Amino acid sequence: MTKLFYLSAIFLILPNLVAADSLSTAAVDEWANSSAAIYFKVQLPCTSAMPALTDEGGGVSWRVSVQQCRGAAAIVTSGRFSSFFSWVARNGAGADRIPNQNCEVNKCSVAKVQRTYNGILDGLKVKVWCLGTSGRSVLGKTFKRITGKQPAVTRDPATDIVRYCIKPGVNKN
Image (cartoon, rainbow, N blue to C red; front, side, top):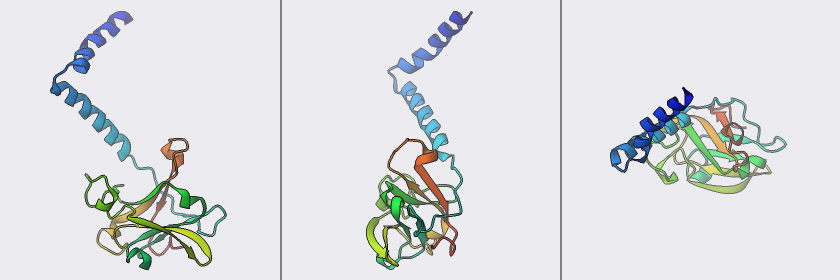
């Protein structure tokens, strides 16, 4: 019975996987793309308490406008958070390619880091991650959280990515 089941499954699936026509290839591609979209749309919750820049090990701060970023919003980090691979702001839907969801490069999105610089803030060594717009702009006001990616240690988003909720006036630490 089980052999018959497996043989039936193979004969039903195999032609769709090995066919050379573009219709079956497109179906497989569509399935892969939709599966990836479902996986990546799941947004894990953010935490409201950002570690202070002065905390042992480092911290994170949200700034709605930084003069050295030409008035754009910035994510300021210290300690271990300054060695992260990347930081982005995200809107309520979790998008970070704002306003152009189809663009892959940072300069197309105001939520992505446009430039970084190292500096000193109140005697503390920090890294400033400048975004593409002010947190007071129309698009900047849609930012609800920031996400930081550590250099791939485990390749597990639950441990390699930190998510902090943006609360204007609260997260400036």
